[in-house]
Image (cartoon, rainbow, N blue to C red):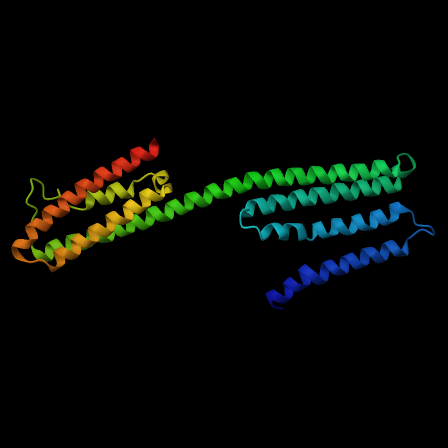
Length: 252
């Protein structure tokens, strides 16, 4: 049996069969003069079965703002509510109906249902905020991974280009204009920096500018290489300073 057929049986045929059997049993044991309690219990029993078969949970599954753990917790809440509601229905119908009026029974069902709804809604609210936070962190982490991979590729490309061109930096340190400084600066960016759209735009522009300089270097030869080496050196220094500025502005 395919998964689709199993889903049809589990989600449609089985619940329908259970509800039909429940209604049939109620009709079979119906008193000669059924009172309001009979019809109330019939409707409430079918409602509880719908909850047990997860129809309310399926409505929540269509809302993307909720996480998978919340759906599991909500299912537990629904199970507790169904057990409590069924227990109260049986206790009242078999024992307490001679002591308390139908109004007390209905009031207890309303209070029980209201408590279940309130707890579920409050949990859903907390979960929605939690999922939003997690999604935002995941988005920033993906953005950081993207920038890190891109600057790593550019740095590797630049180093290979230097080896091919046989160039040397006209500076005190052979690594002064290396993109390693910028690579490490970007790799260790705090995630909250990437929460700012302006910061992301500046990083995009920064990496685009870096690629432009590398492309210029690829086409350059001879004496044209030295000015491009200095340009890359200035670019790295300015970019590092700009990242420090973005970090300070984000903290502020």
